[in-house]
Amino acid sequence: MTKLNNRDIERASLETELKRGLQRTDEDLSIMERHAAELAMVEYGIQLDMRKWDREYKDARLHSVPRAMKHLR
Image (cartoon, rainbow, N blue to C red; front, side, top):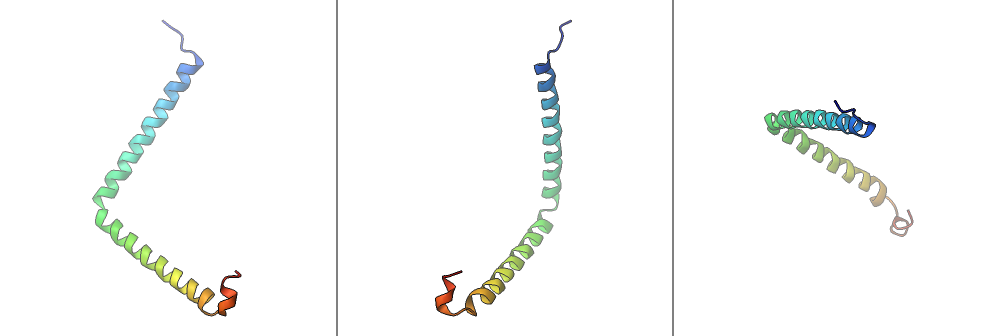
C-alpha cells in the first residue's frame, strides 16, 4: 500500500470541495430554471426601481444646480 503524501491529500480535499461546490451550483440552477418566470418579474421590478432612483437622484442633484456648478462636482 502506498502512502499518500501531502500533495495528494490536498488535491483530494480540493477535488471534494470543488465537487460539493459544483453540486450546489447545479442545485441552484435547477431551482432558478423552475422559477424562471418569477425571477424575471423580480428582476424587472428591481430594474424599474433602479431607474426611478437614478432619475430622482439626477433630478435632485443636477437639475437644481446652476449650470456653471454642474461640472464642478
